[in-house]
Length: 465
Image 1 (cartoon, helix red, strand yellow):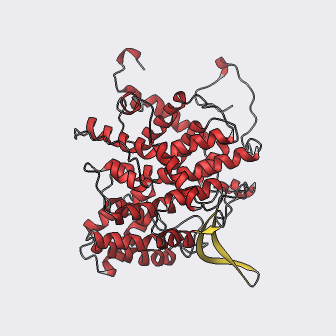
Image 2 (image 1 turned 90 degrees about the vertical axis):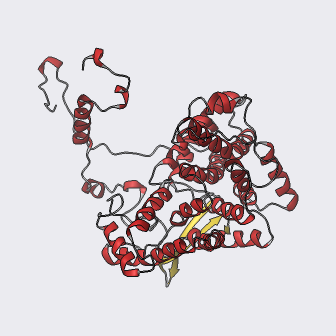
Image 3 (image 1 turned 60 degrees about the vertical axis):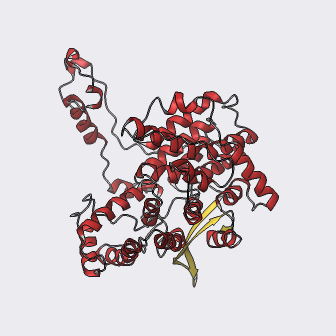
């Protein structure tokens, strides 16, 4: 490469030299799948039946999808348990009493018990107290580097909060709890301001920056921050609140919670640990699934002429599986889960709220299409592919549609997931610190061959040593 011929965009381009190197990496590092069976390695930390390897213990939450019948383990309807409480009891419980749930369930996950009225008020007031950023942070950090990827904006912003914290490296539980409360409170602000900066500087739209509410729930604050007139209906806030509660945690084995445990076990600081969890969630296999669902339905709504025709909808779903539609990946997004088989309790609960919102927004025709696909897709997948367990729609199937009805930008779909899941991350971080465990260090078996060092002048091009 002639160094004098570099242009300003060269660092974003894959040069022929880099392409050649990448090809060699692929050739050298490709591992034959059968070796995982030979060495009894649980690829993806899951066995051949998809069951996760037991890697730790937790008090925080559990995912149940099995039942014992006549002494044998069989698939069952899914249950999501927060600190011993079934989500099917928690959400109807506070809803019947007319409360938002985020703050109450966050208290439960972080502190281990359901709060009394006075405890809930004090906790909620503390979250409101922490709805503030350092002076000029928005101007000096967020506005100076707008980016279309809001998860990157969040990660950069969280790391930049580190130097503003006089006790950033203090891993005592009181200090980490303080840091957790602050991060949970400011994540909606970082997301909204980051999006507004991108919208203004990259898209040429008006810049709208609202101060956070000095009252109310986190769901109300999110809608207030994002809407130019700050207005919202109660049903909108309640549906968003439910979405946040359902996404708050999902057992210790989900990728981002596990990442939190792994990184925390090194005794790194809170800002680094939460940023690592963010990086995990950003991946489309974890937190970006609802965007894929929305893209799939966008094409489906344009392709399928009669949304009420089951045969036409089924034909499109088969095209998805054949890799002939949408992104040609051969997948029906929002259907299937690593643990749940008969039902995802989050999807079952959320569907009722989504229907209420669809009626409120006059989008029942779209909801009917989603409902039809939720029924047809599992049947079609089960009929065409060998399944070790049942398949069902998951919570991502409905969440993107919900956010679109709320008028929320797609750039914030994954950050919305993070605004909820950060509660679980903070709970898992404190659990790891409270137990003062060993650094998490799994083993990898080396399958390469020994080699003999050859002086550079005696090495041939492409020769293997």
